[in-house]
Length: 94
Image (cartoon, rainbow, N blue to C red; front, side, top):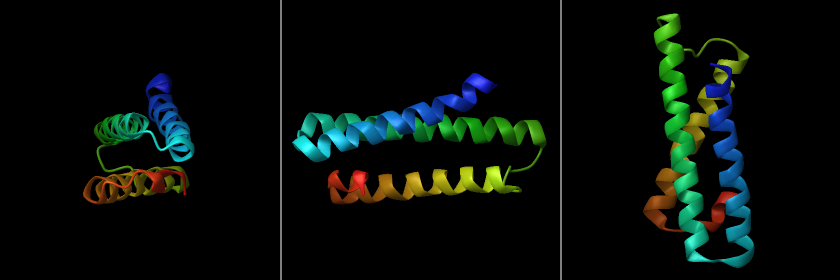
């Protein structure tokens, strides 16, 4: 499970680096890659939360670590929604 927990973090970090590259170059292909990485990170994070829910028997929202994880997940979902509806990818660096 330790490897599974690091996968969303690695994907979020890769998405952030790609958004930074897109912000400096404004290349549409890099922007789409950043969006794809963010989507993959959110999918992996959703899977991780689901695994933790099945293991504990309830949604893992209690405790500092779980609350931060839920906040990051919701923030990522909200950002992805805004990005896909506005088609502006330069906000990812902010």
